[in-house]
Amino acid sequence: MNLTTITYEKKDRQALVTFNRPEIHNAFNGIVLTEMAEVFEDINSDDDIRVVLLTGAGKSFCAGADLNWMRGVIKQTFDENLAESNALADLFYSIYTCKRPVIGRVNGAAIGGGTGFVAVCDIAIAARSAVFSFSEVKIGVVPACIGPYVIRKIGEGKTRELFITGERMNGDRAYEVGLVNRVVNDDQLNDEVDKLVKWILSSGPEAVAMAKKLISEVPAMSPEQFKPYTADMIARLRVSDEGQEGMDAFLNKRKPKWAQ
Image (cartoon, rainbow, N blue to C red; front, side, top):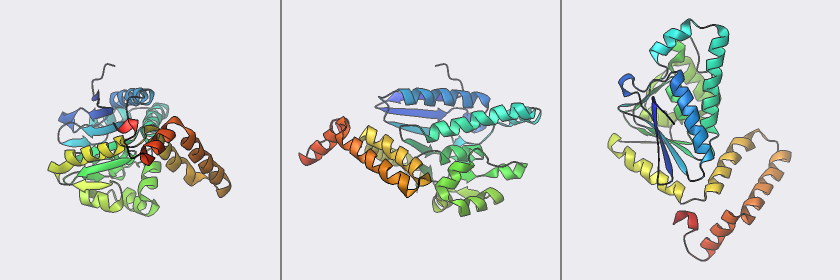
């Protein structure tokens, strides 16, 4: 895989995906979107990966769309804009539905679409100095492709406020509204992420994947749908190899194989 705008490393059952354009605060363009899509396709096909870390090189996480890219967007036709917007929407969905948990290590500014990459992470931990903004309204557009994920994460009321105002938030404010799960001092970010990774690696990988599926699918179901769906899910996991191993390990006071 020949990557020029992001880096992708696999180590210790982890995948580290890094926006790697620090000279422009990791702003994204069409190449970034294509490369990120390729990386997450690979992650979903690699059963050795148990957890994904998404972060940015240098002082920023992702400062939204690249200005030079936007200059080209201004000249595009509707159909050309639609194609690129669909690519962005597909990428956000790919990250959101990744079968492995995605942790956002928010080391700095996450602006516009960059905030969207925070929203599609399962868990986001931010440095206290990080800044956030759904700034699209300031240039006459809206955070459309990221909208569904932000609404799910922080609720309609907070989304209305932040999308309409484009408010600039610090890490504490992002935690207050629910955009990030934890905020820590900058020098504690790596340690906090490492702790979270250890917790995830101690859990059954198939159980984690099914937990993600459960959370994504059940809210849209009626009681007539979710009762048999959830009953079937737990029954299948109990008789699965992973479920049998986990329950046996618990009853015999030993670590399950996946945590050794």
